Length: 369
Image (cartoon, rainbow, N blue to C red):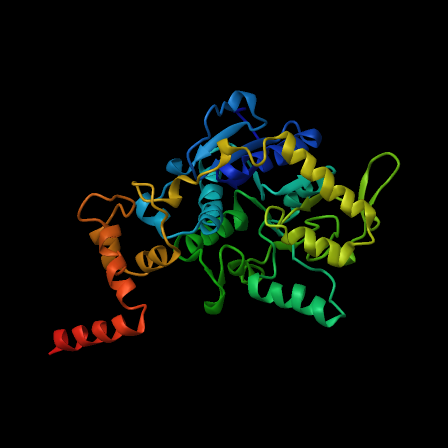
């Protein structure tokens, strides 16, 4: 990399999101060819992956991050939890090991539509930049449920974007956030957590030189698009209202939820639908859906069996299990998998019929005696 880099941009992915990251990187490089783009991969690289042929300047793998007992830590996280948990760790790693003054993170399902130079300029004045999910209150009952209540559950600020300096309060912020994500990056809304986002509800209280970007051209998505009319001018410049559309966040693209919300809140906005459809074409051109991007390395035990969600939660919640099974992916005896095995198939079948339930209950009573 160059000896001196002012701005480093990074995104966090597993294999399946590499096509999205390609779209992001190419759209960013269109406006900022001199910004340094890092792909953070929490997975094994896909077959035939050649960094020299990619739009990324560098690849960082999760193994390079300073994580103690990596396998133990990774096992306790779902794919979404892991890809968000590493964001803070990577920011600290980049700040420590790269000659940069400023860091910008963008989710891989984002596309840049105009220059992001104002972000660099804002970081000359402020140490941390965040964007709220919403800048306008809702009026309809359903929109309050879909958007305002959803934001209360998931976090005020959308952490598909953040920017920070690598000194002053910016460095304090990424160190604080990284620590919280290492310990508590969980999708656990009933207990007040949603991966990396809910933590940043506290950030404006903790860091005085944090700036909330209120320009409606930043982080446009289905949760705010009803208030941000998308238009494409004759010269192909994209706008959100009267402001330049800086970047659009295509959350929910794969499972279809994003398109449903788009049609609910922007059905009459033809240019918004065009932006969505063109993004789909971009993804196809970058290999989205290709079998080479399937299979998350950490989804399975070493023998190929899928790891149940509950097994991950039970493991991360029990210090004794972490000490006893430092490599929970292993199936070599004694293993966490065998420790966590459910009742045998025979026992479960016996309990399914009225007749066998009586026998099963009788056996249990005798055992207790």
